[in-house]
Structure formats: structure tokens, C-alpha cells
Image 1 (cartoon, rainbow, N blue to C red):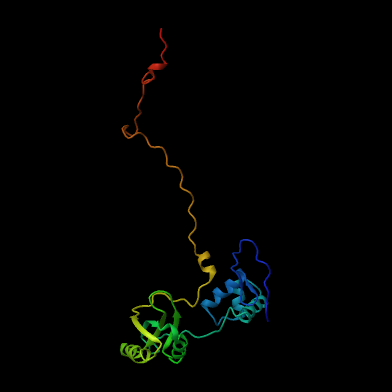
Image 2 (cartoon, rainbow, N blue to C red):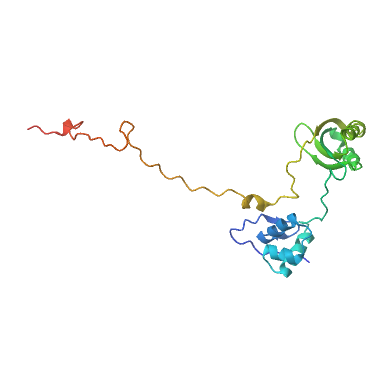
Length: 216
């Protein structure tokens, strides 16, 4: 079941079309926000959270899946409890003529959780989770180093994963922007510094106005 949303209303801040045709609106974004908190939520509860009918929630949810916005559902595992308490980033310099081999060899390494091609000093960043430091050392020096496409590596151990979100949405930044402060009012006029507060200073009318006096 698919859905084509209508033209966005003014002020909704729709990011544009995604995938093969689905145009995300504010309701789609809200659905994705709710699913980020609980991917196993029922359609009825999803409809209540978003503030739409159950039929609309089901239709929009299926449209997000059919269009590829929602790729899949999976479980989030505590790696430490699973026995993989060491996480490391391995930055790799790749021989430029051997990228195809590098990709093929990396796909055969189940220890690699994530790999991205990067700019900068290195060509790729690999994230691995291992049971101990010795396992990371063996992976880098024995397995990665044996790949002809790998020219050099640099390993960094992660001490603490401070923040990890399932995904971010364009609506996140807009909904959490700090409110604009009203313009500051003009400061109240201050008395002359040489006049004590609560007192007045009188200036004679003739002082500095001699040119205004007429000859008598």
C-alpha cells in the first residue's frame, strides 16, 4: 500500500521528496519520531501518539516502508553484555588502485560493525567491537595488514560512547531551536557622573550664552 501526500501547507517546513515519490510532511516526521522511541509500537498506539486515525497511521506507515524511508526493523544489543566490551576505530589508508579488493575483503570480516569512506589523512574508517585489546591487535596486525589493498592503519580505542541515536530527522533541529530573545530595550538615561544621586545641578541661564545678550 502506497501513499502520495498532497502539496505541503505553508509553514510546515517539508524537506522535499524522498525515494520514488513519497513526500514527507509533518505527520510522517512525527511517525518517525515515535518509531525511534519504540519500533514495536502498535498501530493503534501510534495513531494516538501522532494524533491521527488508525487507518491513516497504517496507510502512512506502510507508505514509509514501501518507499524505502523505513528500511528495516532490528534489535539494539548491549555489546558489553554480549561479551564485546572493547570498541575501536581503525583508520585505513588504501592503495588507490585496489579499492575493489579492499571492499571485498572487508565484507568477509564479521567483526567489522561499520565502515565509511572518508576524506582527510586516511581513506576509510572501520569500527570494530571485540572481547579484549589483544583481539583488536590481532585483527589489525594479522588480518587487516595481510590485505594487499591496505597500505597503513591507525587504531584508536573508544573509552566511552557518550551519545548514540538510532537516527536523526530534519525536524529535530527545528523543534529544538532556542527561542529568539526579544530585542533589548534602550537603557534608561543615567545622571551625570559628577552629580550625586538624589540631587540636582542648576546651570545659570547666562552661562555660555553671552553672545545672546543685547547691548543696552
